[in-house]
Length: 265
Image (cartoon, rainbow, N blue to C red; front, side):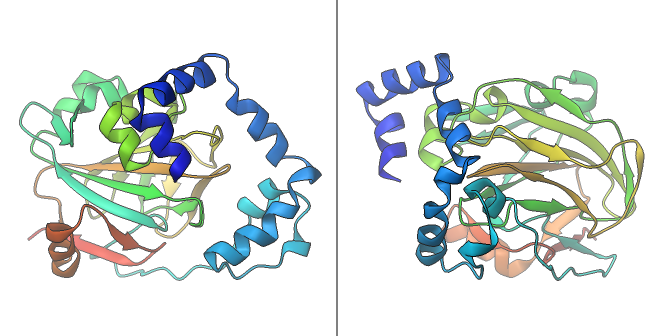
């Protein structure tokens, strides 16, 4: 988006961005999208992104954005599935529990604020699912297992578009919620939902309970956002066609419930 490139790619834009975040001016946009004044935006959005929905079914843009739909899920227990619609990227976690995205270096301990837990993921894999505004913003569990407590970490609300991630360590600065999911087939997974500009709301339905593959875990309110999944060493491997795609481009498209990998052999 031109506005995001301006805010993150120019000196004046970054000054303006600091002011927006400091004074919480983005809340004005959030308020507007929750009112009936935002209803005319729905039909334009539907046409722009080719979304199969009817504008007259929703009172506000927020109602439209948070809509539910029927989803197809791969229930083969050996298959690793995508938790959401989005753009997938993959990064190795080194022996110091670090992963690197362009100019930003991330410590797992900074992401979850739990150094002991972070150390268990040395040599593992970080999968990032970036949800764009046109994507369906609900997400599901990737396997049967047990989910622990939800941990909310307050923070800023930077954009999660690539240009923002190249400028700021967004994933450890933004508002986020994380939990540990003990999956039945892929080992422990650190699961983090990260809010973005305009997306203040992270709504999770469950904690401290058994969960099932394909069960809706939660949803985001408004615009783009990100899910980060961390796997331990030698637990998962990406499908060859997705791995090949990531050799020539930074992200590959995935859909809710589709197979993206398998148990490592």
